[in-house]
Length: 365
Ligand code: F6R
Image (cartoon, rainbow, N blue to C red; front, side):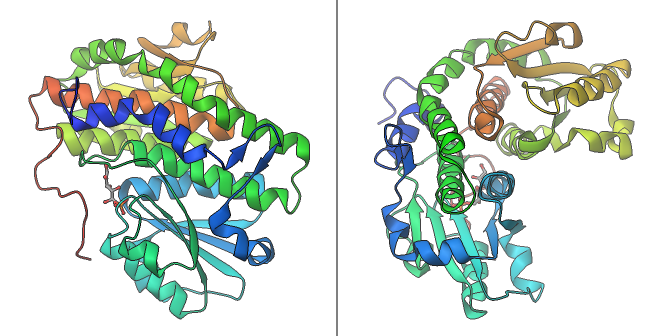
């Protein structure tokens, strides 16, 4: 079943273009410029009237929720909150009328996520699921949802489920947004960008050997930082989680602006700092964050937009990804970070598909 791949994780990273094609098929209708979500059709009116969305999950699925928070507010213009399922459940949450809770989970069996979903339903919320495993417990307990269609994910580290979660959240945002304020022009722009992702991912995956060479340079360093702003802040968290989970290197991810408020004290000579520095609204701000880190001896690994001739002056290594609009960029920018974690773990001799202390799905709270 592994075919030519040495590990499931690598196979699943490379399956992402096709996983996304399956996730988008019949839903992101490029020619008609619309999103078709059969699973939500019966609830369309309630979704339009919804006053608040709560996106919830754990680990990588929570990172998808954080991107979803930006997507929903940016595109659907509806108040949205991303929250750890484990924290939501026990904080005596306020669930007003018109609240939709969206449970995000690859396995559909995560105990914390299931408990949060039940709590929200109990308090009157409508329950949606963005789930990969068909017929799983969470999927069965939701009112409606979008299956991810990522295919079976066997490696413990979640990869293709994450990018499909981002695609599903983008489709949900456009689906809701289009019924409210989004014009046809913007709708078409987002759908076109989303539909271009599978082919663009084929290009991103070609960086694998370059990423391995970069990983080899820094693999003996025990502390890494991952920094990004806006849509890339959750991607930074995800890059750090992947690295710590499978290579046992200590890594932290945070919004790039946060380093000035304390973590900059960590930076010492030669510390690898990964910046997601793609072109967009906050590009100049990211560059100034890079300069601050570099002045203190940090080694800059930048994920940047193809054709950016400026970034090389500020970075020790640059991994280029194709251009796309900002809401879609996380789908591309996360992939070099998945590859970085994979190669670092292999170089350190770690068991990539079965990292120590971890199971594929966490069924205790
Ligand atoms: C990280 C990872 C975990 C899961 C989390 C939620 O690579 O795999 O953080 O994302 O345990 O799992 P699901 O999505 O099955 O609810």
